Structure formats: structure tokens, C-alpha cells
Length: 115
Image 1 (cartoon, one colour):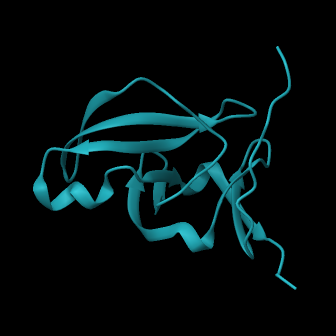
Image 2 (image 1 turned 90 degrees about the vertical axis):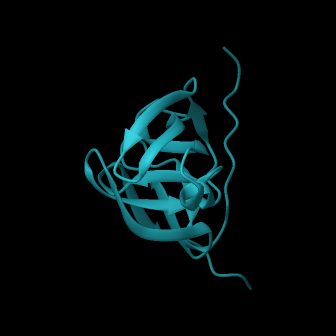
Image 3 (image 1 turned 120 degrees about the vertical axis):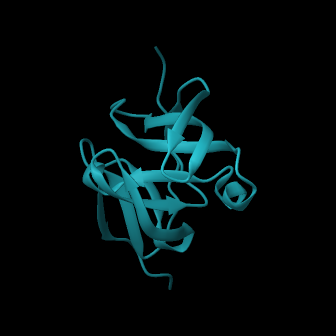
């Protein structure tokens, strides 16, 4: 199958896959903590690495219809959230290209401080 290459976003506060601890993003990329996913609370990030994405599909959400992709951890394939491809409602377009990570499916930890 070949080697699996993972990125590391750096930072002092990291968010990782709860199943395998693969680092996905950091606090610097956090946009909002005021979202809800299928498992409860969810966070919106402007950049997330080490993801696999599903095909696009339409999903009706509390804020209207969206075209989304489910996202999974690149290492263990566990679903961790979704990415907004397109928002049908003009006021929701700020979400486009951003990723929701569900709080129950990720863990946070301390990263490294720069010297």
C-alpha cells in the first residue's frame, strides 16, 4: 500500500482524532465553537489536515441546505465531521471550505511552544 504521510499543523493547542491521536488541526485555525453535530457539540475550523473526504452530497441542516463532504481521519478512517462545499443560503456562505469537527470525535492537547 505504501507509506502514509501525515502533516503536522504545529501550534500550542492541538486537536486530534480521538480514536488514533492523529493531529488534525490547532487552536489558531478555530473559527467557532458554537456548532452542533450528530454527536453533540462541534467546532468550525478554517484549516484541517490529515483527512479523507467522501463524495459531495446535499444535507439539510438547521441553517438550511448545504453541499457537504463527510471527513474521516486519514490514519484510522474514523469519521470526525464534515466539510462545507456550498451553502444554499447567502448568509451561510462563510462556512464554505471550512471543516466541522465533532467534539466527541476529537481530543485536545498541548502542543509545542516556539523557541
